Image 1 (tube, protein in one colour):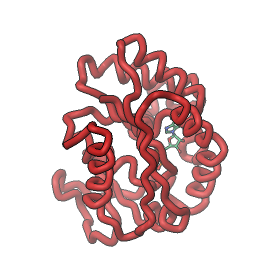
Image 2 (tube, rainbow, N blue to C red):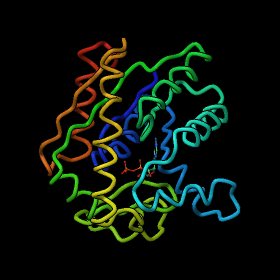
Image 3 (spheres, rainbow, N blue to C red):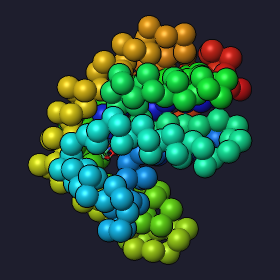
Image 4 (cartoon, rainbow, N blue to C red):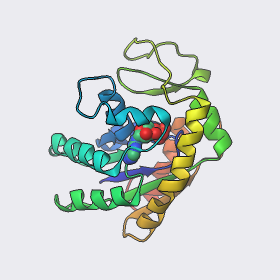
Length: 219
Ligand code: ADP
């Protein structure tokens, strides 16, 4: 089962992707994580090109598609992939279809996270991540270090109000078309509305599982 997670920054794609990956034994592929990893290595051929990530702008389709194709190849025989943060443009969605097609696979499920901008902003401004395992936390949980890795949690460089606003703008301008693209396809399109700022990750996960179950895709 291949799943695309669609939703604005802070909507919970990363957190829910992790829970789904564990539950269904799938591999989570986060383009944001891949890019942040490259940005830690000044010798990487894409290092200069990826500097725009820090400004909240989208990376070019050409570069994103090449990075994703390479990552998929390296995965070998995964049971399925959860695409987190990809595709973000219609050209990327078309490229993904081609990549999966060549492996006799397709996008099976699209989970579209709908969250109001107020809630998103609250979440992003309080977000902390483990630099090691990439697990996501919120300051209200009170963790200083990752309970698994015992490494101090960090704030992402693009999680400040100015850059967050640019990321929302990019999402609204460029990713809206991706919804239409998948609504016109034969995948299971699941619209999730997460309007409770205090909903726990586990509650949202259960909401997703019950939607999948209605379509015979989970028990
Ligand atoms: P968020 O969804 O919270 O913005 P991500 O970790 O998914 O965070 O992405 C961080 C940044 O990486 C984006 O703001 C963008 O610059 C870049 N990026 C990630 N995925 C893509 C993509 N599919 N296309 C273009 N740029 C991307």
